[in-house]
Length: 180
Image 1 (cartoon, rainbow, N blue to C red):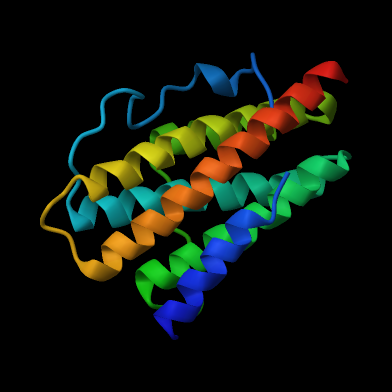
Image 2 (tube, rainbow, N blue to C red; image 1 turned 135 degrees about the vertical axis):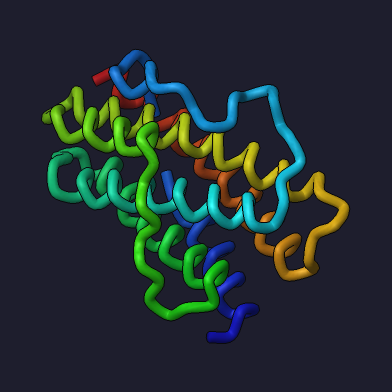
């Protein structure tokens, strides 16, 4: 797989997409607490990015099955494509397997599986928003590492840009869902 093409695909996927508060998922603590960015090694960056991506893909697949909201489904489709591309680039594998979820990530998925209808949509968007904020900290933690590879730096910079775009889109989607 050509890494440059995959990285460009990741950037394009992040630019393509169009949010929420107060759900059970919001009560699940993120693995990286906002405001506590710490420098991450390449191994930590890869592991945390891939786990976050696995959760994003699995919850987005659930959104495609359960949501009746076109905008939620649209975001889920973009998220699946983005996470697939990111995992391909980070593992240099055409079809990387999902990373097993730890207890915290599994709890988010389990909580989401128990919901349906508008409550599902709000929880999905809130969960994605929290996950994207966590992912942003992970990328910044790696970029703060002065002992990083050039490829890793490029991946983290592009991922950070895409994550920032998704946060904006999720905030807008959440506000739309709140209005009903």
